[in-house]
Image (cartoon, rainbow, N blue to C red; front, side, top):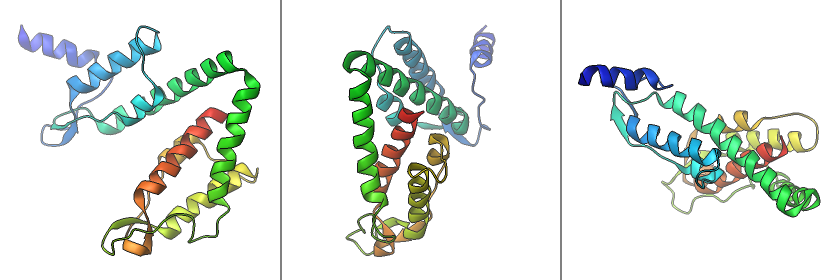
Length: 192
C-alpha cells in the first residue's frame, strides 16, 4: 500500500527525479512551495514575486531535477511580477507605472553608460572570487543595445547568463553584479 501511494504521489508530480546518487531539490519542499504559490496566485494567500525568486530548497540525493524546478520558478516569478504590475496600475494609474519604469530605466542606464571596465566595484580582497570584467561588460553592452533599440534581450536570456570566475580586482564584485542583473530581469519582465 505504501509503495502504491508513493508511486501515485510521484506520478502526480510535474518534475522528474535525478538518479538516486545525484543531487536534486528536496521534493516535499518543492511540492509545498508550489502548492503555496498556486494558492497565492489564486488569491488565497500572499506571495510576492521576490518570494519566488529568493526561494531555495535543500539538496538531496534522488530529488527533483533542478533545471525543471527552476524553469517553473522562473515562470511563476514572471506571473507574480505581472500580477504586481497590474495591481500597481489599478491602484496608482498607468502614468505612475510609466514614471516608475522611466526611473528604473534611468537607473540601469546610469550604470550601462559607464566606460567598460568601470561599471561595478572591484572586490577589496585580492583573493575574493569575482566575475570576469569582460563577461559582465558584454552583458551590459547587450542590455544597453536593448534600451537604445539596437537589439533585444529577454528576461529569460538574461536569467541564463553566466559569468566566468576571476580573482580579486581582475573582476567585478559578485553581489553588486547579481543585484544589477536581477534589476535588469525585473525591468524586462515589467516591460513585457
